[in-house]
Amino acid sequence: MTVSKILKEAVSLAKTSILDNIDQASQYTGKVNPYGDKTLLLDLKAEEEIINVLNSSDIAFDILTEEQGLLKTARKAEYLALVDPIDGSANLKRGIPLVSVGISIVPYSETMSSDDAEVSVIDSVFTNEIYIASKGKGVTRNGRTVRVAQPIEMKDAIISYDTKRTFDSSFVDSSVRTIRSVHDTRRSASNLLDLCWTAAGFLDAMVDMRDLLPIIHLCGTHMVFEAGGYVIGMDGKRFISYLKPEKMMNFVAASGEELARLILNSFQGKI
View 1: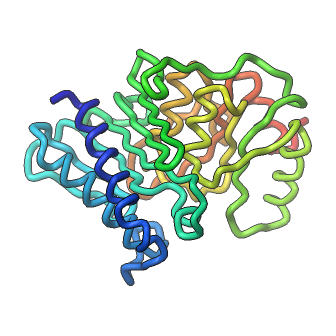
View 2: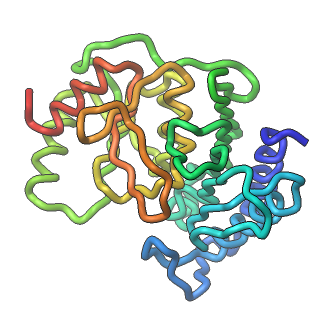
View 3: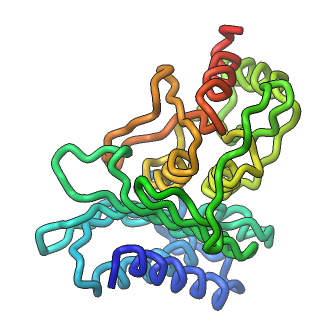
């Protein structure tokens, strides 16, 4: 079985687990995950489905998960899998049908980075969209190739902007500048889904500068890059990150480099 088929099977079983146990959406396990969040029962169940598929395959995976951290294989690892079993847990608890499951795999080496992502799969559980990014081969949505939106002026752009953090005056000012600089905002509260919608051209950009998004969300930025978009980091350079459990992501993911830089400059008060 190819790695793509393994990931699709893993995501499919996680999705089935969520739908079959939807009545448990608000239940907690009583534990706290490595990122300091209380673990929802469905998060753990979906994650276990993914882990079981990966561990039962002929390919050896080290697995970095949201709820259990880094799980090392007893074999020599061929890939690192980064797993977000439910992105949009708060939506799920409230019955809002905007929830996604995401996996990205990177060939294992001592110098792995986000640029090495080989295959990523993101499934939007309730909107029946499955996105697959393959290194150098683009992105498909339900089997059809998608691309980022055509270039647009910042004042006409519609973006996703994540504001979920403890507000301080600096972040408030940066957020107001950014939102004022574009035409309008949309936010599903599933960042992976917003990144997929950016990759598919439904949104012009997705912005997350909170320093709160774990590297397990790599599959989302991978989608944007492979669909022809550009992702820029807070340092003003093309986004690239090492792959460690403690690493957080800050980025503007946009349909093109020019728009990404303009949005970043607006956030930083440079325009």
